[in-house]
Image (cartoon, rainbow, N blue to C red):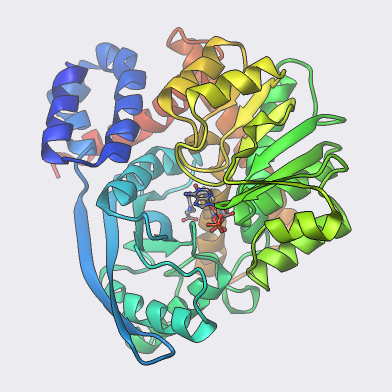
Length: 444
Ligand code: NDP
Ligand code: 2IT
């Protein structure tokens, strides 16, 4: 097996998709020792098949704004791999979305979903639509138009989308309503649904809580806990909000949050009334994080990311490539001992490598943020059996899944000679299950 050869081919066949190239290269490098031990994988061209999505759908999404003006956006759904279950993964609505972003996310999702231990394949979708500044009716019309094409490609045993950046409970509701109208079926075709219509308790909290549970497991390996630790978080959306809540519950102190305009630094800790203010600001009023600084009279840093603030633990929960090598150096210099990726691929490859080589406990995205999709899997399970579990029950299962993901990634890294490197461990543990399923199912 020649990684360079496969990588050259990926670049030639997917020109300009730099985020996708980045995600593929990391996995190829990690699984090299497995490929040496298991020649049957190379013989069946498992890697060459894995990097090619099973199906890619690109479609027109026309919609009308409140002034009666027509807009046209582009919709995507990449159904990447169904070896271990129906395609599963979120939808991202953000102006930066193009096929390369959706493919990087869909590719990562294959291994993440495998790590959860649940029967879910990998997929991702979205649109270059920007929900920011749009009215609820505009968002509804967009979601309805988006689903008017997407519905024919998805289904509870085929492909089950959920949220991601720019897609939360409001958007899932509008899309679910349209799916139901078009198909006349009330079924488990989306996750992240409202609690009164098939949603699961803990799904809103799951990604953030899961990332913190994962961090707890990493800290345990060095006898540490969250108690009294200063925690820097980026983002102030779904993942960041609930990561902050869980850190507070475990005795840590969250001192930053951010959005795409800048970050706030609150040395008092973002908890209690201050945390509730963020929840209302971001989920109800849909305002900017700068308002927090005005309200509580703390520092706001326009156009900057929070990595300059000294901390023991950093949780990037905003977007891809938000931690550069320089940021990583700054964090390590300031005493950061653990980084867990709540966002997808937030560390650039050289930043991630720097953390690992400098003794930082590093939880890569596909392991650390798998709690969201895992709880989506639990939502599907409840829908299939027609029951709803309690908050405590879902939280218990989420916690156990995060403990297992840490254990499996840690052990895989050790087995293949990279003790403590959870990037390698998570990639290998996620990969082997999917590769074996593909072998079992023949050349499809
Ligand atoms: P939200 O839309 O709820 O929040 C995203 C946050 O990140 C906002 O504060 C947003 O700021 C900020 N952000 C987005 N893009 C950028 C950017 N280019 N530069 C700086 N800040 C940015 O999304 P989520 O919280 O759901 O998602 C955050 C991350 O977590 C993403 O990487 C997502 O893929 C990942 N993730 C999400 C899961 C989920 O269940 N929701 C599961 C696993 C991973 P602003 O409002 O200004 O745009
Ligand atoms: O990146 C992710 O794992 C998600 N956005 C959640 C996917 C899901 O299906 O819950």
